[in-house]
Image 1 (cartoon, protein in one colour):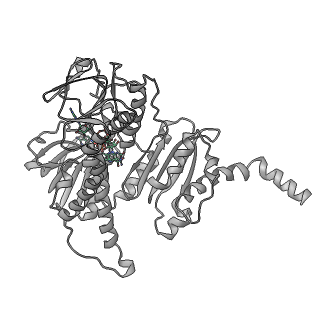
Image 2 (image 1 turned 135 degrees about the vertical axis):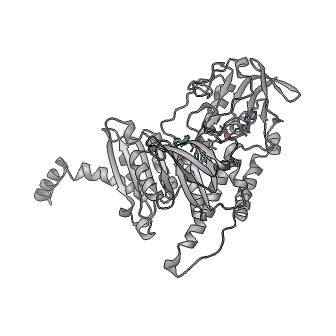
Image 3 (image 1 turned 90 degrees about the vertical axis):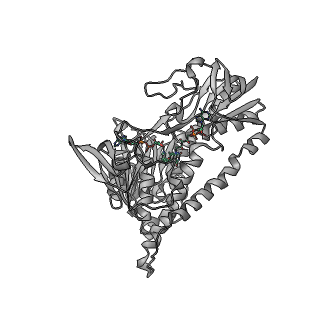
Length: 465
Ligand SMILES: Cc1cc2nc3c(=O)[nH]c(=O)nc-3n(C[C@H](O)[C@H](O)[C@H](O)COP(=O)(O)OP(=O)(O)OC[C@H]3O[C@@H](n4cnc5c(N)ncnc54)[C@H](O)[C@@H]3O)c2cc1C
Ligand SMILES: NC(=O)c1ccc[n+]([C@@H]2O[C@H](COP(=O)([O-])OP(=O)(O)OC[C@H]3O[C@@H](n4cnc5c(N)ncnc54)[C@H](O)[C@@H]3O)[C@@H](O)[C@H]2O)c1
């Protein structure tokens, strides 16, 4: 009998396995694929960021004529993907089966099936545990598009093995998966179109961020919004979409499906253990990450809550405590940030302007911050949303490296902080986070240079100086 069994060796599952084994729990991990690491390592975060970096380097070289450099040459996608996959292999070493076995984790290969409340069958083995964690992640959502099954299309699971750069590439979906990879291929030299069924790209972002992203990315990508793809033909080379009630079509060398994610729950016989799914098929969990069966937990993408690697990791840390020590610690999402790694990057924390009724908004454009001016990277802005008293409830930015230089706001918001705390530190001149000093300066200007403060100051200076 194991203390804990984890199904799925990705970002969430590996966090639980290493945490539980380190605390002395008898731990088993079941993974259906050859390698541990999950989608983030093999088909998601890691290869996509490696591809983005390569594409950005090529883009920079091609745009260096101001310095007298005229870069030329054909892009070799195969060589780029070799480099991308070397990044994956390097990180794979710390997610290896052997490393987890050395930690004391029994690693089983296979896709298990529940035989009862806390009993599983995996390949020829029957395993039992006091607690079970479902960490099976998500996979590519295939919307009901006529002809899709017979088409030859790319997804995030196949793109990093490609060697031929298509002349034109059409994406279905303008979420983060679609946009990060679409911009990379545009920078490699493809003619890229993105078809989006909704009326905006990046629907979870603050409205002003969405508008700015659309303005900037439209220079490299053709966007067609309110265009629902309903049919493909000619092996995926002809794409039919409905816009303004009319069917339209376009031709493309290659199609890329980025139309969202679906939970990996198939084949586990979950009804046998009393686990309940929500109306979209994600595993229903309470704030403590318990499913309807209190001995079975679920974490990461399979729960449908903020599908990010760092969230799966936070779920995992919480579940180690709740599962092993029967605690009821709760997950909170209020101060969890995310980044979209387009150029420029987009940072998101807390509420957007649309999500709050009464808000105080402080905004600084990057052309007011010396480092961005020096680097000719002035496009973008930072926006801090506070309540009436100045407590930060949301922070959003679009700009070069925004995913890095916005991080101090997470620390401030984590402790329930006030916007003025962003000026409680010295910013070495001229760094990028100085954008935060500038935006908090707006709060002080409002406080000090309007209302009663300047009146009192004038009187003081007149009488006492
Ligand atoms: C293109 C792309 C880019 C992304 N970029 C980022 C990013 O930059 N930053 C970020 O935070 N997030 C990013 N994400 C999201 C991130 O990849 C996921 O949120 C994260 O991988 C979720 O972790 P998880 O543990 O829930 O699932 P996964 O990491 O997918 O792990 C699930 C594991 O379970 C295994 N499994 C599935 N079913 C079974 C079964 N029945 N039996 C046994 N094993 C099973 C799978 O093989 C897999 O190894 C990206 C996603 C994509 C698609
Ligand atoms: N940088 C990051 O952290 C990062 C990067 C990539 C992905 N992710 C994670 O992966 C998750 C999934 O991203 P995603 O982009 O796959 O999903 P998404 O749900 O954000 O976007 C999918 C888009 O496809 C559109 N769509 C669906 N069917 C369509 C159709 N038939 N025709 C036209 N458009 C259609 C939807 O309207 C939607 O806007 C994200 O929520 C994020 O959590 C994170």
